[in-house]
Image 1 (cartoon, rainbow, N blue to C red):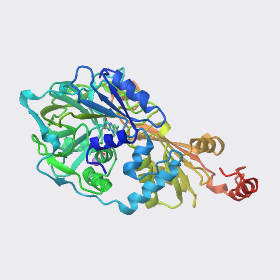
Image 2 (image 1 turned 180 degrees about the horizontal axis):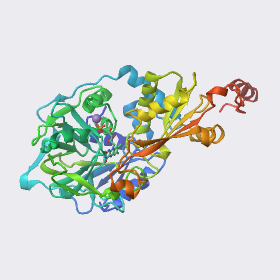
Image 3 (image 1 turned 120 degrees about the vertical axis):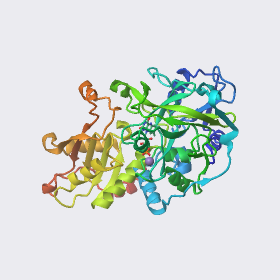
Image 4 (image 1 turned 135 degrees about the horizontal axis):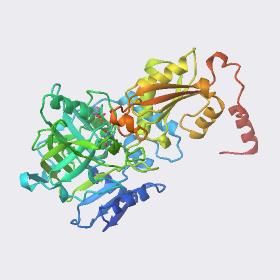
Length: 480
Ligand SMILES: Cc1cc2nc3c(=O)[nH]c(=O)nc-3n(C[C@H](O)[C@H](O)[C@H](O)COP(=O)(O)O)c2cc1C
Ligand SMILES: [Mn+2]
């Protein structure tokens, strides 16, 4: 359990998992170093200090979870790199099923986040070394490893999620929320009445709280409660000075303000390097709703947490693993026979789901695919659902490709669903689709499994049986 981001950074330093850079430029250099370090094996956490043009102590940290071992510290995942992803998913699933009980946050009167409070003319977002992360980014992003908090005006439900935040001037930011995000659904309730939505943005918080911000929890569920469960202790919150919204008492930097109705005002936003590996949303006109900042609270010597999307490297909690576990639970609620689920990281954060299924009746495989395609945990930006047999490890890309190569006939095995849940982030949206704001895409269901109606006549595989393998290995003293 970590009380704040600093404790996590200190532990990294102690265990030799921190690399510090002094004197870098916030303008691209910091972002490129973050990318280079994230792509190293055993990628360290990177800490930037003495950033060009900024006072010592005003730091940026990135690559918190670029190595699975550091996820193990809070998620209890087996730390070894050689552990199969299937085992990690199973382990996480067992934990959430047996133990997950939300623990509500507790309000405290004060906390380190209140060490500095800026109001009115004293507000200046350029006080912080906000990076320009990628070469074609349209500006500087203070919110990448952030949590954006707002409150449902009808139910009082407090939600937070990680949504990107661009700085425009001393006291103006934009927040990019994909349509359908909880933060956007809540803001809509204010906007529909012509009101602005009070909002708070934390740009550096304890790793458990940040992990919660990246989970697609169901509607009405508080991420604070989930983070409390993960920590084993409630999160301490203070009321924001301008909005009264509960913010982590140990946050590094919190920005509060009015989130204006987009009907009233928007600003050009992006382009921004996105998790699909492209700069796509800017092609949809690239405007986003605006926050007029009313307060900045920050700790002395604040650490801004960065998590820019990177190609072929991850730096946030692996949502592929947590999502696979949730999908598996969802499938188990609906049908029998699921032996494994994987969200293939190499294809992107959301795009490809594989389910290993023991088919028990006609149509079973298609049904499983449609449960995935229709679920809250799986639907967004999903392009491929692949059903494989139980002898295939769904998280082993080679085995999955072997199943597609050998257990399909494309004309028979692939179905296309159209008009599914997507967003402007999809690089493949055609200019015509963007013009009419059709942000949907299709989903291919690939049944890379033995057809049920001749499942028992399907040619056997040449994979050596476990019994024979064991016998031969024992005889010849082969241990691996
Ligand atoms: C590092 C990272 C960055 C993200 N950036 C955005 C973003 O800019 N906009 C967005 O809508 N979702 C973004 N997401 C996804 C949301 O944070 C995620 O779906 C979360 O569940 C949203 O919270 P909600 O379900 O309460 O809406 C990001 C996720 C991660 C892990
Ligand atoms: Mn939520």
